[in-house]
Length: 404
Image (cartoon, rainbow, N blue to C red; front, side, top):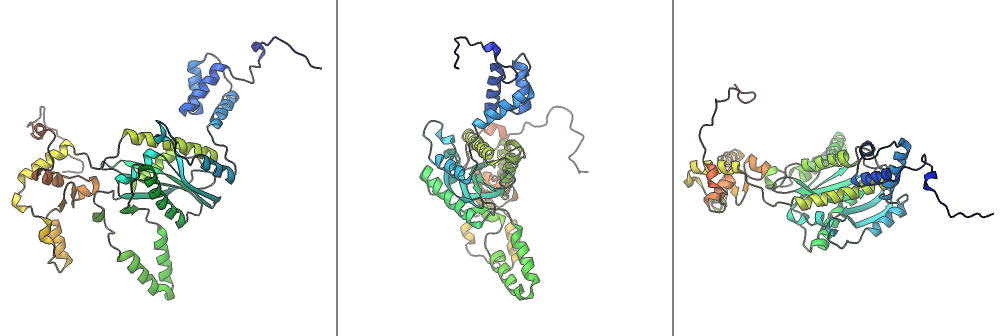
């Protein structure tokens, strides 16, 4: 028997099974803004005059959050998602759209997925150093994530993208990463990306392996040979070689901490939710890079200008020599070289110097002072260099900490 009716009364809708329309709209906007469950409940309390059960709120949150999560349950699903996102987007906001530059997914232990945006990867040619680090405990599948980028002249860290690799973290994954970065930079910008310096963690594997080899009498001589040839005799294993680049990967480690603190909330996420979170993270990184452009030279503050101006005013100009006078070195002992080296400063214009301050901040009074002397740098506001004399008020009684 089939019955029909022309009457439909919304008032008879079961109130216990479906939340009111204003509540559903509030939850939808809260999910789009990335609010938590507690924040969403507070928003409902402020914008809706009525009660909503906890089960209704949780169901709505799970539903709207699932709409933004890719449907990935198997290896083939992940491979299909990578295929769908491997093309460069076109449009006014395309530079912030994440895409898969290269991938292969054979199994959980043999996987490589390189994700970036056009804005992020276009920053790479501006720096010759590439710090790389792996972060763990981000997803249920225990897949490591390689994070890489570089610091600019003012020392903030600019990420280039992420790469999801297999659980074994094989050396082939790093080789594929370096090749993909160069290819992706050329495809997006048309520029050749040449890495002068590569920074990675000092792994304990080499030290532990040498210790194990030296404990074996048959491998003792080989261990000494390996250490001398591959660890001690290699050039450029000192800070002064990479002047103008960061000495540590603190910026990269800080970024890894922000990933776990702000995006995964220190939880291991299922792979679909993890992919969605990484997509949101890359978009935010890309927009942040557009707001704060990569600076190839450090910003010179008024305080540095004051120090450089005072140092240059007190400097004996006859003590400035050019490097070409020291093409041949007459020292026979390292002690003589050390005395000569620390007797002055080796300045390479425009902003490189051998002092400790320049190694850390990429700018110092010596480099700025020499640039002023040769007319390569013009002080922005000369009036700020003159001291106004004694300040008003009584002098402070408390001295610096740990001083007598």
